[in-house]
Each structure stands twice: as structure tokens, then as C-alpha cells.
Image: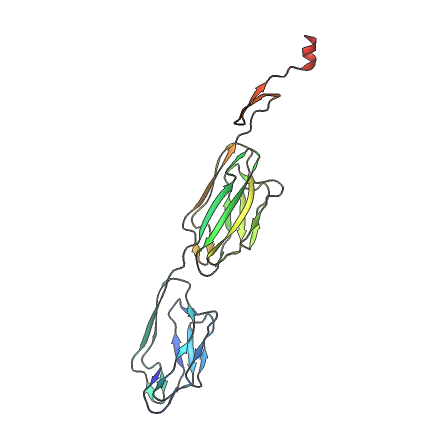
Length: 265
């Protein structure tokens, strides 16, 4: 606000700046003014900023500053209309317009892996789900992240080693085919993990996937699925007697005669 007059000018009515839809006062408004004696009102989360009272010194100017934010990307045009500034020296005859461009948040992402990727039937493998956040502020989960295991694959027996570094509540019950992360957050410019053990009684290839959109946060959802495959080697036939073991780990069964039957012959 400028005053080209040789004497100071005082505001005769509050100066009210109404923010465009989607733009709000930041949680830390950091509001201030250099207009002598003026009082700033800028409530966190609000859509108006008000200067009440105050004066602009002779041949000088003064400012009102406040931090604002927007959760969504776009161009936000903020304007003060003609006559918005009212003083004892008159009002502004031209509008004041400014535009802020807000970039949309970078998308969060999911990754998934089995370790080891191949096990024997009845063995254990650890699933690690990695939640990534490339944004400069934390990404908070807005809905539960649910991983449905493929048919035949279940959370492992006693001590499934279920854990998370994401906070929230992680549920992975032994014998179940579903695990859930409720709540939690992903660090800024970082990642966090969910881990648990699984097992399968039968051989086969088990494809486990989290679909696009499975991870929902205040920074958006994952655009791509997270997929991993576990190979389970079927159980070998049991032998009464192992005749030979090969370097590959395969073996050849031999016949064991009943001791008493052998003696009778």
C-alpha cells in the first residue's frame, strides 16, 4: 500500500483480502504488517486476511504479509478490488492482482519383494512392502493399506515377524491371507516398510500384488501396482532309505527289506 501524499494517511475501514477457493492461511500464518498501528487477523485454515486500523506514512508504503497454502495443484488468482483500501486520503482506483502457481504433489509409490524368493513347501519367506514418498513433507495414510495374499499363501506360523516402520497399526494374524496397515505416515523425501513372514504348504508360483491406488495418502495414491512372485518347491516323496544324494540336492530312494522278513528267507 502506497501513499504519495506529504502527510500520513490512516485507514478508515478494514482492508479485507478474500483468498480464492482452495487457497487458505497456513497452519503457521507468520502474519505481519509494517503499517503503523495496524492489526492483522489471519486465522490458520481461514480464507480471509484482514488489516484493521493502521496508517501509511507520508511519501511511503507499508505491507501486509501472511503465509498461505493449497492442498491441490493449480493457478490461484488473488485480487483486491477497486475501493478495497479506504483511507482518509481516498481509496485505491486500480485493483491489485497476483497469481500463485501450486505444483501438484509428487506421487507416492509402493514396492514389494519376497526374501528369499524361492522356498520349500512349508518354509518361510519374508514379504517387504516399501512405501515411498518423494515429497518435502510427510505423507499421511488416509485409508488402510490392505495386502490380500494369493490363494494358498498365508501369514506364517508362530512369530510371523510382523513389523512396520511407518507407525500406525499393523495387523498380520497367523494363518490369515490378509494383512492391514491402518494409519501411519511416510517420512518426507523418504520411505518406510512393512514386513511379515508367509508360508505355503504346496508347491507353485504365488503372485502377490498391490493394485494402483492401494496406498491412499494426503499426497495422493500410488499410480503403479507393486508385484512380487514367490516360488515354492513342492515337497519331495518320503523315502524309507536314501540310497544316493546328488550335488544338486536331489536324491535316489532305495529299498529297505524288513529285517525279520530277511532273516526268515
